[in-house]
Length: 497
Image (cartoon, rainbow, N blue to C red; front, top):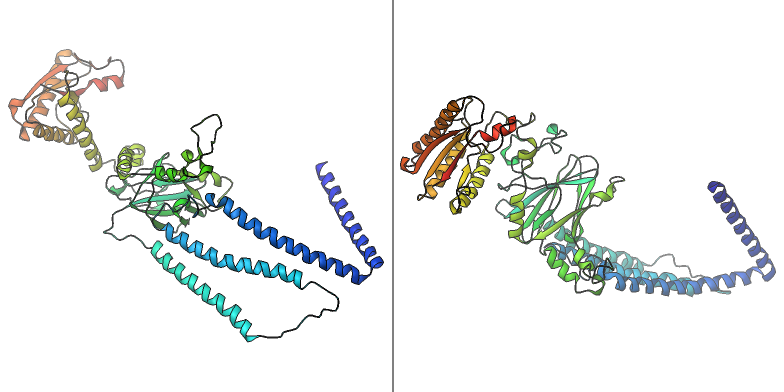
């Protein structure tokens, strides 16, 4: 029914237009062709003048009214080091083209009025004028040359890559339908290598986990941070279709092309809070986003955002990510808390190419850091429970007191701690589950505690600072009612005396 109504409306419009044409023809016959032509020319000329005034006024008024929401004007000055130069080029180009626009606009519609058809007026025919040719060819060519040269100079500055000796952070942005996957380097400050042949459902970026640089890389899915005042190099790539890495407030815009890595280098110069304070100076950003909440001013809701500037599909809108620019200290604290994608998602699984390595260097380093912090708390503790630490990564061969090769990393951490705190002495305690006879469990636990003490003394720790004792299954942490709980009860720990 709706289609029929639309069709009938279209037919009606055609009929009305045809009738208007017929009325015009009848009017011309009654009044005379010249009279109609004179009236039409007069009204066309007057309406051209009206359009000239209304359009130019609207252009100027709207530009003044909305300048504070446009990039490069009002509070929206660039938040990056290079952005101010790009903004200046844009403003110069806008000034030049704006002057041309106004002059041509006035000339177009003034001429439409001034040279409207009038009786007894004849058009003047000019076949050629060298001076005019020189003006309208030479002047634009000179202006365009100056604009292009200045733009090219800025382009070379903006697109310059980092040098090896510079202090910078490198991150990676991978566009896919419909999300940005952002990869941050870990404590080594380096991003690991990729190989598209390694791409799987578990390893969607095709990271090569044989490369140690990949072991500490993080893929934060929520909050994204950048440090203020530090150069950022972004590797940019796409997995499926053409995307565009767009940080409007930083004047960063670069295509993400499948199979063709690109990059962009920029330096943030304003933290998110500093940008908000700039916005707060303008009345329109003091408006409330929620009338019921007096603290919901627009400037408080501002966030830097990453968008895709290509129409990459129907879910294009969902590629928006929020970036927060903070101090270097805050960024370092946040970055240190990011979990390694490899250690949390890949390590120990069938797809892990490093299954034959019991303890990786990065795991040993993380364990050492954790052990040092726990040891400090234990030394400062007041109760026996506070002063007791479990050696979580000390293990033995099944049914014996022989230490596994991987245990040396944890025991070396203990050696370092004992050297750091020469005033303390320890009791090393062995514990088992309740499987087997209690007497045998006590003997086994004592042998295991002795093995730890022997390792420590072999590393130079005085035997006078160490005691060992086997408790067998007499002090379980949890009930021995499942394989998981029995594994928790099989442990070696020490208490600071």
